[in-house]
Length: 216
Image 1 (cartoon, one colour):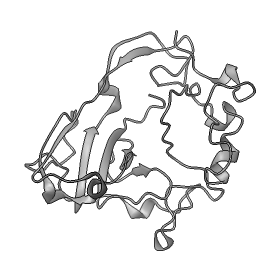
Image 2: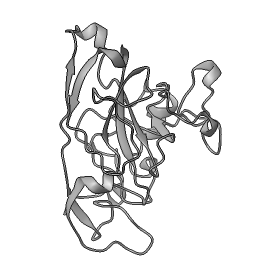
Image 3: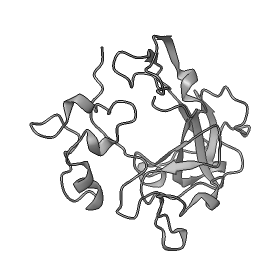
């Protein structure tokens, strides 16, 4: 958990309407700004959205130690603050059985929302925002989202704001950009994933070890 922003995590089933869900259990909501419908889905959504947690800080236990001045994360600074992360398990019951094609494929549409601001959604590149996203944030600073053309959550050179790694992954230390820890990340990103698909692996020459957080 890097940085000082208190972020949350949700996901959408992009092919499934909210009304197809009977019940949801397992979300960890502590901040009282997420509105949940009686069936457990997030209220105000056309497609089914589930909030796993609304404040990542609250999902850690046994937090100890002190970070260097200016750092605020947990398990991100060498010799700094550490904690034990929780595992969120959610159970979703459908009103009627649905086959895999109807539900869609993992990772579905996961997203973060930062600073306890529900509208500040951050998705995987070119994944669509949910009904509750704040569209006024698109195209500002380094974001090159263009909703009219279906371009979302990328910089002008296609660098993403969120990545999904389906293997074990060692993140960079606090305040070090991912492309300063992984030598082939930029090539993978700017080619939209057609090159260096294994950029995140611990292969010879792939990483700058001094910029990678090591479990202590």
